[in-house]
Image (tube, rainbow, N blue to C red; front, top):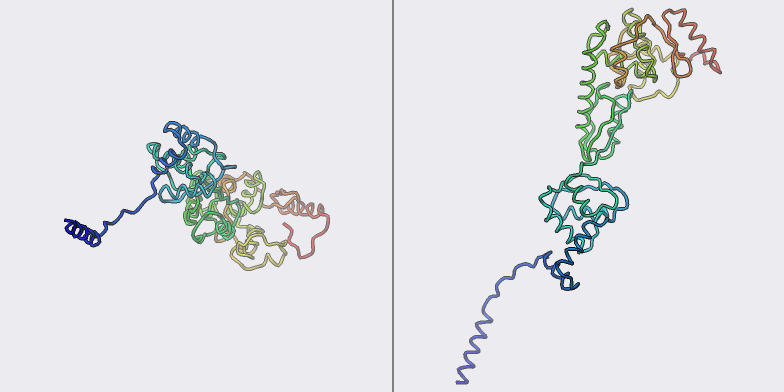
Length: 362
């Protein structure tokens, strides 16, 4: 009998050795286990733990100032990582558990969005979730001042932060000067398209309500003359008067003789010339130099603003054909050459030092 038992035991041992072990499932980190662990370690009741969770959920967070954070596409893990890197959420296990639980329990309030979002200082977990679900993306701004050339506008676009992609080629006078808002990673082609659309919309509206007596053939000519008016004066009240002079000269077949067109001819819209014009500059043979060509140049010399567009569409009534700088930012206007020469003489007399013989005096 003892021998039979030994043989049976040996057989069982051999069978056990030959039996393959069934594969064990991978162990995953379970937040439920963490929850249970917290209960066991802390000895807290479920009610006490819920109270502690609510306290953490509503208490002020670690952000010291309002901060814009980029929330990437992906699951909750990437969102939590972004908040922790931005120091908007503590990285301890209990806070992570509370935040994940809050996401699940408030899911009916909306989805979490991927965007650049602004989180207020000391935002609680509840505040964080409210911004993640209902906050508007952060808007950045690019201001295009009146009177910039296409080259200058392109430089601004190239340097603008948080835009992506190359700047498309801009024709002169094609972009409307104003402030444009955009979200992070907007393509520069989108901004340029908005600039072009804004210019067309504004010009069409101004052209439709223009003075019917204007000696201009189309909206393109209005933009060209407005760009010259834009560069001739920085005083808003003078623009309709400057427009009157140029329109009267166009009607009379007199050359516009505008200094800004000569500067544009010399540097192709690179910006300020960096020196005064001299008489030799006025003889430069270039279609943009209105000292040598009659009528309008072939196109704008900058992007005019709304005030200059309106000044050309509704010029001041009168017969003035000339203007000269006063020396204090404004101009003196004249209807006759004799009166204009007296204004020029007064301007020269008022200067502290006489100009060199080759200097161009406006």
